[in-house]
Image 1 (cartoon, one colour):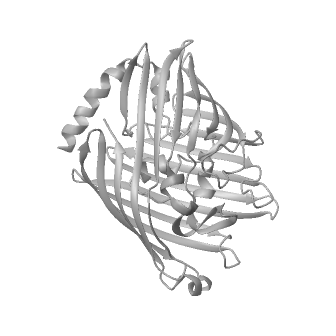
Image 2: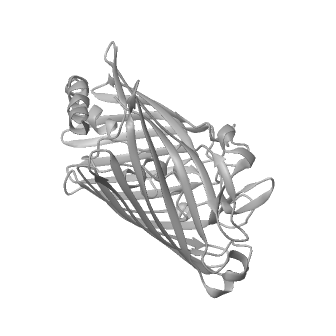
Image 3: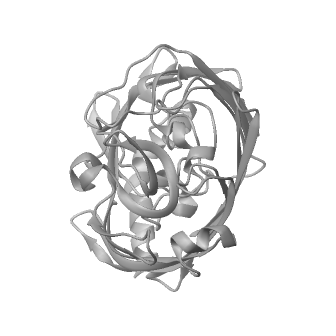
Length: 394
């Protein structure tokens, strides 16, 4: 059944793909901002020919999650992280223009400005730094213009977004192929991909064959607690990313940037460096990611490491796994602590109804922590997520 659906999907989108130029196909592979999953990964979407040479692509995913966590600092919650994106492409001036926007109902479906996630840090709620909790995304996750023009065999890409994603880090976790069946954020989010919602973003990129080089300017402060607005600011931060794509199955990237006062409640800038490898073949996707933050005031460094995989088993089941090592210095127990997190789970597809692919799943995360944290978190802290997954699909 799954194979027949895949063939049907390919036959449905093939006429639309045939109408696209090289620049149009290139834009179709964008994930968040100008980041890219491996070309061989087929992102679930609905494609429409809108007439007058306009093509529409519609993507979206939502989880309805019940979280239960152990220990004195563990929390329980019922909530729904989600995002929805529309992109519209049109030939222009010998190239292709894309107009896109992404929204999230997180401000309404993640109540009290956070959901429980042991050892997570970053941003604030009700005037206090979030600890053991993950912030929701803004209503406007992105809105912008993307233009690609062919110069011989070289692609020139120009991207501007009042809200968007600069050329820094791997594909953000909500859009990463290897994380597509995991509803919760990575503990490494603020070391690797937290700039996926940034303001006043401009990027210039050149791509040719197996390589791509990008440079971005953007506003470096992360979103404030008001998740319904746009947090406009000057283009005071910068980043660059170099990617290598030796085949359609692989993407390697290295990137670095300077973020001007990313945490609004804390002084000082952050110099961030990341490197990652992403692999997709068939339905199997895996990622290895490293990210480091250098605090300019304290001159201190902290690191994060993620290994992540999504493996199809049979026609309807997907096994997920994630391993993290993260240096945390913002927990309520003073000091710098290396946290280990081990996540394993499975999603079972129920079927696709009216272009909504449904599934149910669960995952468990076990944590390894230093002895100095056990009084606050328990000897063996863990968390469980049970969820319904909804996804747009042709």
